[in-house]
Image 1 (tube, rainbow, N blue to C red):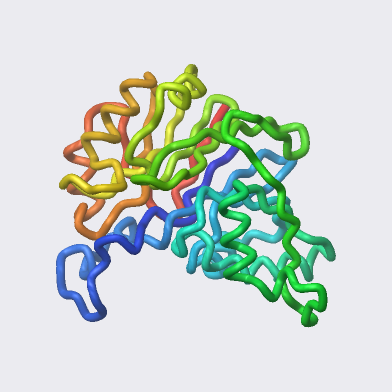
Image 2 (image 1 turned 30 degrees about the vertical axis):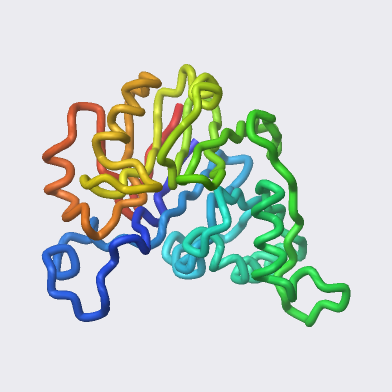
Length: 255
């Protein structure tokens, strides 16, 4: 299974246009971070987790030609705003795209993209097949078992996803003991690390490291990185062994 980071950034802490700071002016391509999302491919299926505002460009940049399903972590705009562009895959595949999310996220999708769910649909609107998921209850895409689990983004439920020995978490601040128990045996973890300073709804660098160590992940990749965290090379220098800063376009193989 291959995991490709489509985006590793966030709207949190992003400065205004024409900022002249070190990150904005960096020549390192690893500092050019689109909104957080991953592509999951295993030869049998192609899945995207979250369709943020950069979804269309991410699909073009990665040359994604087929999409079997979308998983949504939660309903904040930086994770769903690009859902309309699923329509390109509808046209190419002549079928609706299954979208797996919680009932609360489904309500948000129906509000935000009301035109996709009306009785009389305008030609060309996205065709979305909403599939309900519940934390702790696994589901199948093809023959692949996917386990959703709950993390808390301050007081908001966010879905993390476990696929085999791989787990993906974004926008987490706290994780219950029940959810931690579902991560036993995870070898490769992707987890949000917004910045070094405390934040009300996101893991800091040190909190992400402590969480990864607590579940005994062998390799951990940090994502959902804010502008305030700094440049890629500087962040990486401060990480312990087994921890890596993810960057847009990075692909990792999961055995």
